[in-house]
Image (cartoon, rainbow, N blue to C red; front, side, top):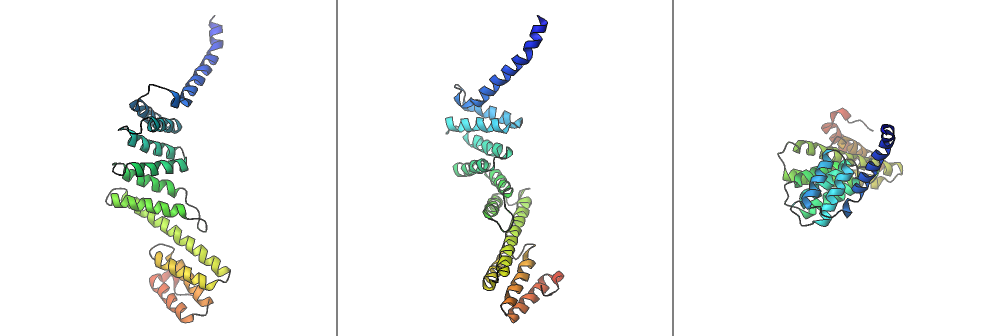
Length: 243
């Protein structure tokens, strides 16, 4: 008899596992759960780093109890759980819903900071679409408006500077492309705009040097020399040499 029980034990364990999985998968079909039950379940699953299960609990709460006092916290929990689970698109949508639906919630600064972090993970290299870079800058900027003196403000400011430098490098890539195709007026216009827009980032001298090149290619020697002197004065390491 004991041997028979030992033989059945693995099958019983497997059956229990399947039953528990089935219950989790059918959470949306379970009745009798209150908003508090669902919220507690979502928090518990998030603490255990079961982010998929946490998202499911928060989502069911929002669908069943959209006017619940816990709805704002559930929406924030849904966004952070999806972010932790690397569901980037879904997390971004969840953060946007939180920011739109609960503009006076005390968690708004947290949502803005996290959204900036989320978007920063998705930015593409210079030369490719920089939409996520711009959106990340916007999120961090809105965060700074809410918490200009918070401990995270310095981090947000540093991220904005890093992202703006990425945009400057993107502009440099575009100008180089124009130069390689001998589209010198276009290169000059793009370089001038980039120099004016990003004067305070590490890539600024690169943009000035590219402006010098575009002017020289068009035979605008006086303007090129003036810009070269500006480059040498602002960035002595460039030495005013032709590039």
